[in-house]
Length: 232
Image (tube, rainbow, N blue to C red; front, side, top):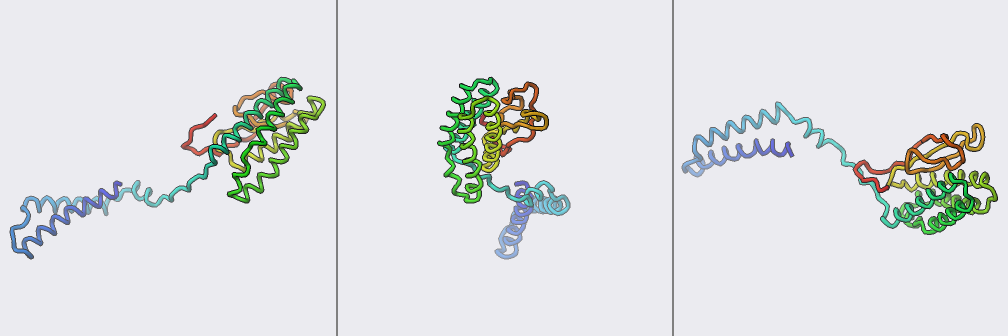
């Protein structure tokens, strides 16, 4: 915008001078007032000096800056279906933290229903993403059945760990962009050097693997555009 104003600062006084000269020498009529002509000449000189001697760096940088690519967004229905699955997943990890097998099975069943309603078909618009997402999606559904059928909390936790890894892969593949999520780890969840992982919506979260003070954020799932408002 500033560059346009600089150009006008040259063009307008130049136009006034040209019109004045034209009226005097071509049409042989009284030209523009001499004072106005002098003022126009001065404006023209100032404009030329400003444009060529003091170029506006900010304007040049703005002109040379590449136009940012538009970030592709999922539909509202897609995001809603995924958020329902995430909400059910948080209920599941909370049930694990409480070590209640009945609540664990109920939460796993609810999560299974939510995953059945996940609008994965929408990803067919990009065949590569769709084909990549199918495997972790199907694996996650299979692990939910294992969580429900496993007889003990310890075995259920092993299945939860596998499920969480598949869910992490799915969220990363579809580039979930409605909220920043945290990939947590308990380094000794299943014994020394045998970590267990889960996803949380907060940096501080209860450990579903039965150990207190064993939680570290390993990485994040964060595809939220910089100018977006976090939905969670």
